[in-house]
Length: 124
Length: 124
DNA sequence: ATAACATCTGGAGTTCGCTCTAAGTCAAGA
DNA sequence: TCTTGACTTAGAGCGAACTCCAGATGTTAT
Image 1 (tube, rainbow over the protein chains, first blue to last red):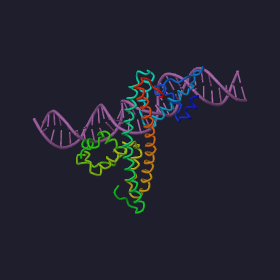
Image 2: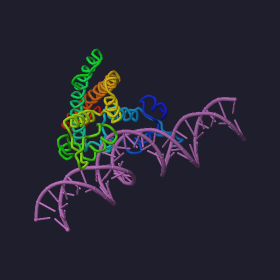
Image 3: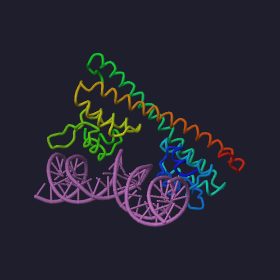
Image 4: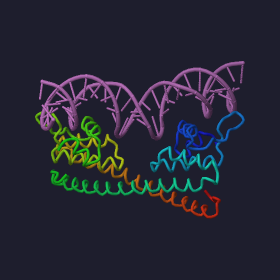
């Protein structure tokens, strides 16, 4: 797969794909004879993982560290597990914060709904 | 309340409090005769709201816009309601993304748990 | 062969959200 | 009175995550 195909498929710009590879968010991508990137299934798997994790807000640093450990082989299995656990816990906290904020937005919106009828806002 | 008290109470640095006021994330804060900030109950309310919304990831721009509209009075009630709705929808999307990513992390972690016993990672 | 187009690299620039610095003001205590 | 410490402003600096640019090279179609 070419970089433009991968870019379309995962909704990541070509610049970002090259950037991710450069800083190690994904491992080095396969090249054809002309030196152009030719993404294998495996390469795509890493791109997809990065896209997913980034969409949830994981920092690039955590992803580069995960990739670095993965490339070191089975000796780093427990380190990688630990890394994933830490990130999961960060997401768990974030999930609660977002839920609470949404409840608060719901309450405020309900106040505005009432205000739309009376023309006056109470208890903002 | 002094800026240092408010800073401690809401876990926001004094620099950030001044920054928020400067760019309009909170309305202008009350001052004493010497020109020092003296946060009223109301001022604190805005700080607390900003802290909550920021913790969930709302952009500063949405907060400044909300404050700007609020200061224009009752004529902007439906605009403000709309703004809150849009932000709530953004959070709803984010919530789902984070949940899905957490499930994926859970799956990967379970693979690593197995790998910790066998010493070999299958199906990463 | 030439034009048009995709991709490459290295490096500069941008945006967001702070965070820090410098130089000045003010209030209270030794 | 002098010093210490909290506060002020304006503006510079910073880290994260892109995003853009210039100049080179390679590929494809006419």
